[in-house]
Length: 159
Image (cartoon, rainbow, N blue to C red):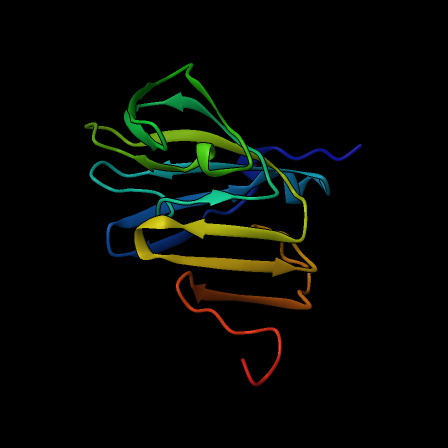
C-alpha cells in the first residue's frame, strides 16, 4: 500500500500567461501507477491547463475549497466546495478550470494513467501524443510531441 500526506509534499508551480497554479502529485508520491491524483490550487483570477480533452484517459475534478467555474464541452458550469465533475475520454470531456472567485480554488484532479494518449487542444488547433508514459506521468517516453491538427502527410513519401 502506498501512503502519503499532502503536507509532506512540496508544491510545484506553473506560471504561463493566464495559466497559473500550484500542484502536488499525490498519486505519484504514493506510488500509484494506474490512477493519478493531483491537488491543485489556482489563485483568484487564474486558470488551469489550456482547454483540452484526452482520448485515452478519463479525468474527474473534486472541489475542496473556493469557488470558480469549469469550461466544459457543452457549457461553463459553476464550481464550489463539494462539487464533482466527471470528464470522459473523448471530446465531451473537454475542460478548463477557472478561478473567477475571490479566494484560492483548491481541487483534486483524478485520472486514469493510460498510454498511449492523444490530448486535443481545440482552442489552439493542436494535439499532443504521449507514448511510454501518460500525460502527467514522469516515466520516460518513447514518443511525444505537439502537432497542428490541420497538418497532414501521406502514408507514402510521395503523397
